[in-house]
Length: 377
Ligand SMILES: Cc1cc2nc3c(=O)[nH]c(=O)nc-3n(C[C@H](O)[C@H](O)[C@H](O)COP(=O)(O)OP(=O)(O)OC[C@H]3O[C@@H](n4cnc5c(N)ncnc54)[C@H](O)[C@@H]3O)c2cc1C
Image (cartoon, rainbow, N blue to C red; front, side):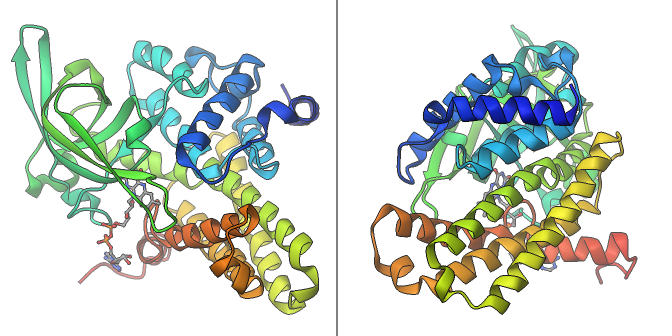
């Protein structure tokens, strides 16, 4: 299906199903996750969630631009929260590229349809920016049920782990000295004995991420993504997805929230401040658009997507700084749903320079890998 045909068909379907797709709850994570599952199920059963994905994982084929537009339409109409929705965009491509074809064909439709939630177990208490130093380890063991990996260690900041049925987990299968080459990726069932999930409440009051503990957790050998020692490649291929389609959706959300602000407080807005935010939002949109088109052409995305992440984090904080400046008293003090939403979004925007790789690390990548400005001393 071509993009224009997809857009008009989808827009019509969304218009007709607005009542079913609109959330009817406040900022409550359990309710948001339940609603997200409903939106994905309705979208999948009507075919929309399947376009842009390969037929071999239950998709209907077509360009990734179709997925870009679907997420844009859902977030800009306020039907889904972009961070929760876009986990699919981050994790499904990894499964398609690295899982065995049978495993990908079995699992990816469950994620697309919202029957399952998956999480990404990369960061550890001592390992975020320096991911190559991770210590959660997996050793090969023979069991009566065949060869397995035995996993021990801890992850932290694992988004949605308490809702997840599966986890894309980075583990150390080689020595720390072997750094990148000693890392492998496993696809782990979260109900395996030995896994404990402890949610952490964020600054905006939602337990959106968790600590996850692994204590002698047995993972079948067939659940390795890629080869032994290929975990670094899995991570490096996954992160650009976090900074392409997913950022396009988040950009659409920021445009909507800026429109909301103009509608709510037009007369109080300084036109120059507003203009600056609009210009930066359009820079983000235009950069993100060209990244999506590169994805569409089958180009391999890499470190240049750090530019997209820097622009996104800058815009996200600018939009909500502007809102907090204009609506200061409401954002700080009022408990009505509209003020509460601004407060939640403002507080969450502080995380934009941390999640998916911190702003400093993105700038290091731009300096060293794109501009060749030298290495760490
Ligand atoms: C909302 C949210 C959701 C998240 N979800 C997930 C998830 O689902 N899965 C997951 O695995 N992780 C997740 N994370 C974790 C995130 O990836 C890490 O927080 C991030 O990579 C930074 O790592 P860190 O917290 O260990 O900070 P550190 O790496 O300790 O960094 C601390 C500070 O030092 C700076 N710094 C570190 N090294 C350098 C350097 N070499 N040069 C310059 N500055 C440096 C950083 O920029 C930062 O300001 C999430 C985080 C947030 C906020």
